[in-house]
Length: 254
Image (cartoon, rainbow, N blue to C red; front, side, top):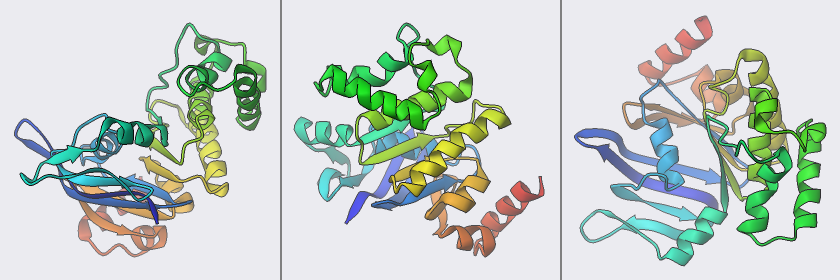
């Protein structure tokens, strides 16, 4: 059974059709990399998946439960609030910007939602958070504030915050786009370890080396559509579409 399945997703902003019937499936333990040129609809697809944007048409199911489906008018209708709450609690999202609370310590940034939203015991939540910080190489930063951290450290805290909520699925929206190359390596190292641990992930990324080496499946998007889907070997080694061939060649030639 797929952890996440999206079918026929369409989304327009004004007269601009940004997504044109896009479908995506994610199996347990898979790492799905969504690649393609800027403006191709990658981040909009992720925002629809996480309900930061509403779909015009299309469906979503999560662990076999219907979250959204087309109604008789062909427009998306979302499930009842209880189902949507279950869905939202089942995934974590790591943004381009770190979105940490500047007035909270690192430890509180990680534990706040677990304590306030999930009503977990504070001591248990903090113990688990410290374990996550150790995995991130940030155990000594628990009492620090975001302004005292590098960008790479802040992004690793963001990942720890998402993991603290025990998600079934992690979404990453260009998690390294705001980082310099050295800090990018720190964050990608954490993501590689998550993949080794069989964390289910959807990663919108321009990091082609990560997509080639770590992903289970790659989707290439262009102009609001999925032009090609396959294994990293298929997409990077033997793409079928000329547009994909040209894009891959330009990336690795640069």
